[in-house]
Length: 193
Image 1 (cartoon, rainbow, N blue to C red):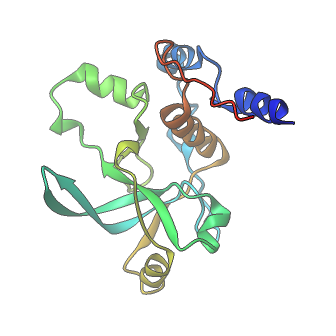
Image 2 (image 1 turned 180 degrees about the vertical axis):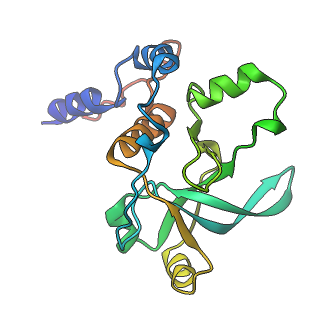
């Protein structure tokens, strides 16, 4: 029984095959979504969904023991069913992307093609600015506080992802958090008897 469990875990984790990261990185520059609307839904479902962008939200960040308070939009990372029952909701900052703030055109191109695993570029939609989601700055807030501010219109749902946008978001998040470790990392099994 224990061996079956270990086999199941080794088949499941990491969630991606060993060379997936390299293949993904190579294919990303060649992918051009059919339109900028590829990522978004025009309709709004009443409940919040994983992948929705909401804001503005008070975001606290610590740098060199100094706290910065920022108002940001954020993408919901928590699973949709958890949004109705868990006390805390996971979010990542959705930072407006302004090309004029960057002088390195190669970096802009790489960012827009979503080659950087910890960043998720979302193109402009209607009146919204393009966003860069920063998965390296994940934070959480109470569900109660978010719902209260949504009801009072202090926080708005800015965008909802389409099915294709949601799958791409899930793929980016999986590659960032669960890609296989490099071959120089050797984890030993703790074989219990």
